[in-house]
Length: 380
Image 1 (cartoon, rainbow, N blue to C red):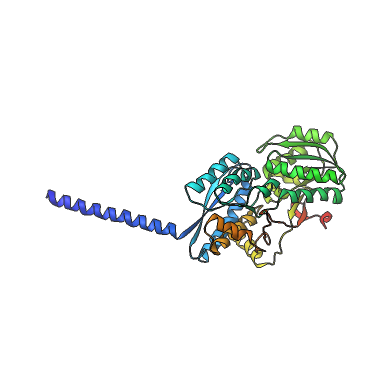
Image 2: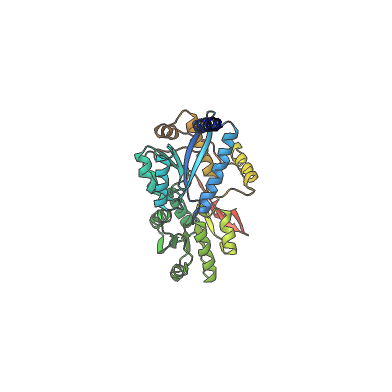
C-alpha cells in the first residue's frame, strides 16, 4: 500500500512539474509575442488631469492597434508608471522600465521638470523618450533621443506675448505662474518678447504645485494695476486662483495657456473662469479621417470629450507603433525612424519632428464665454 502511495505521489509531482514548465513556456511565448512600450505619466497629483487624459488617449490607440492585428502581428503592451509630476519619481520609474522591463521607448512625461530629469538617463541608455505634453524650451536641447509631439514654450510664449501686445493692446502686464520648469519656461519667453515689443512687466508672482492659497500673490499683483495677467499653470491651481480673484474682487483680464483648454477647469472654477482667454495649437480639420475617428471613438469609449493631452497621447502611441512597424526594435533604430517622420497624420494634426525633436504648429485663441470655450474675435 505504501508503495502505491509513493507511486501516486510521484505521478502527481511529475504532472505538477510538467504543468509548471508548460505555464512557463506559455508565459515566455506570450511575452515574445508582445511588444512592450513604457510610459511615465502623472497619474496622480496636481497634473493628474493631464496624465489621465494622455493615458486614456494612449489606451484607445493601443486598443485600436491590437484589434487590428497588433504591430507586425505582435500585441502592443504599455507599462505605466506614475511620476506624480515629481522629477525624482520620474527618474526612478524610467530606470525601472529600462532595467527591469527592458524597454526601448518611453512615452512621457507631461511635466517638463520630469522630462528634463529623465533626459540624461534616456540619452545615456539610448532609450527614446517621447513627451506628449512637456513644453519647456530646454527640452529642445536635451538630447538626440528626446522627442515631443507637443509645442515648445519658446513658440507658445512668443505667440502669447505678441497676442497680448498686438491684439489685446496690453502695455503693462503682471505674471502669475506655477513655480516649475513649465511655468517659468513660458513666463521667461513671454517677458522677453513682451518687453522687446515695448511692453512692461510690472510684477511677477508664482505659486507652488498643489497650492491652495494665492491671495497674497493676487493682492500684490492687483496693487500694480496692470492691463492684464498672464497665467501659465495647471488646471487645479489656476481654478483656485480664479476663484480667489473673484473673492478679492479682482477683475483684471486673464491670458492663459493651452493647459487651460480642458473642461475640468470649467468644473473647478465655475463662473470665475468667465472671460479668460487662452492659446491653443490651431485645431486640425475635424473632417480628416484620423481626427473624426479619434473623437467619435474616444466619446464611445469614455463617454466624454477628449481633454488636454488626450490627442497627443493617442498620437504618441501611434507614432511609436509606426516606427516599430517599420522594423525598428532598438532605441537607436526607433530614434532613426522618428527623426525621419514627415507629416504623420494624427488626432492633434500632422506631426513632423525638427532637428531638435520638436513639432511646430500654428496657434489660435479661445475665450470662456457662457461657460464654454469659444473662438475669440481678437484671434481672427
